[in-house]
Amino acid sequence: MEPRIQKVTVVGLGKLGACIAAALASRGFDVVGIDLDPFKVDALRRRRAPVEEPGLQEMIERASSRLQATTDWGEAVAQSDAAFLVPATPSLEDGSFSNDFLLQALRAVGGEVASQKKSRYLFVVNSTVTPGSCDAGFKPLLEETMNGKCGEDFGLCYNPEFIALGDVIRGLLEPDFVLIGESDEQSGALLEDINRRLCTNSPAIMRMSNVNAELAKISVNCFVTMKVSFVNQLTAVAARLPGADARVVLEAIGKDTRIGSSYLKAGLGYGGPCFPRDNRLFQYVARATGAEAALAEAADRINEQVNQRLFETVRAHARTGEAVAVLGLAYKPNTSVIECSPGVWLCERLAQEGWSVLAHDFAAGEAVARALSNGRVRVCSDPQQVFQQDCRTFVVTCPWPAYRDIFAKAGPLLQPGSVVIDPWALLEGIAPRGRNLVHVCVLA
Ligand SMILES: NC(=O)c1ccc[n+]([C@@H]2O[C@H](COP(=O)([O-])OP(=O)(O)OC[C@H]3O[C@@H](n4cnc5c(N)ncnc54)[C@H](O)[C@@H]3O)[C@@H](O)[C@H]2O)c1
Image (cartoon, rainbow, N blue to C red; front, side, top):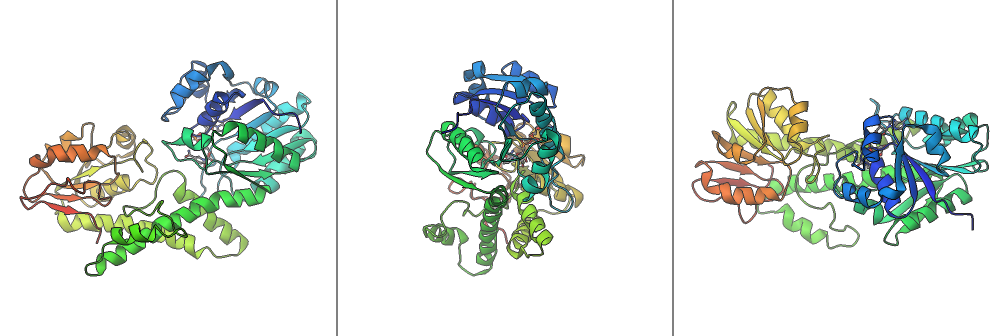
């Protein structure tokens, strides 16, 4: 077997990269992180987490003797035999992802590897990329920069992560499976070895060409969006079928092993920084190759309809101009991320159409206050504040478990005739009753 890789650099210390750096260090690798943002580098140097993520701070403290940070490319490359590249790859208008930050990083690392005359350096791309990027973009750039041959003088692998914000550390250490794209057998074997040492479970390691791995990565998220939209399609049908209950149906069909129960819960649509854009990237790839992605397109369309159905449900209960409380602004519990969040979408829509909105979230309030300029949305820092206003319509848009307690206690404060719209059925069993109170768990 080839000598193992022990020293690595992690390029891009954002939401994913900072966790990869800490996880590798915690599992015994010598890690040097590098970022264009000096604040993130400085934070890591001071043993502070550069981004918010549960468990990250503790992990950095535990692994600090093996975790360095720098803004100097020469130093990062000198102290490593492999680079994990995790810069952002922003979505473009046509649905594809921009490789600009990645190309910039590859050029910087490749230039240093060439000038330091390092042999068989391993480049590992972790960012999500448009399929075809490794073969058509990264490989020629590195071959030119380093005046060498990919697969012989250096290796190029694609190793995307399947993590969920709020659960990144567990996702990195205990993945369902590891996906490796490889330019050559030797590079793939080295990366497989790194992953086996990183993971605390024993996941299946799937090795393949770089383009297959690029396509596999977005296929996973695209498939899950399709599943979520199937649930929302079924929910819409059941809502119109007298006596039908989508939740009962979903619980039953999830027992079929061909279907499975994960992501099979009635609620709202998918959001966040990955699902919507990975699904659109799949559509882009289909268009670019002359194929059709009807399922991915339908998933998006159904997802938009869920937001619209939520708005219509509010409109059916609250007269224009009244106050509406929107509880839960993050795209899911345990994160402050508000990208493509149904709660934020609803706040904006209600405000545009003349309602006044009292909004709350346990983590995302500040981000929403910064992002929303509409004066009709007031972000409350304390959830109790929304009950003290002249408000009769409450919408739980993100199922933070703590809202259960809050509603259990605040129930008696609700005005007669109040409506609680609860698409996740979070308040089942404790929803306020009597005094003409209405609890709506199904979107019409
Ligand atoms: N966050 C997630 O949940 C998640 C999940 C799976 C995949 N991904 C993918 O991982 C990639 C990174 O996502 P993120 O959420 O961590 O992004 P982020 O914006 O939080 O972090 C990116 C970091 O890269 C740095 N950077 C940009 N260009 C650089 C360069 N040339 N050199 C060094 N540093 C540079 C930025 O300063 C920033 O700190 C994206 O492709 C994303 O699609 C993210």
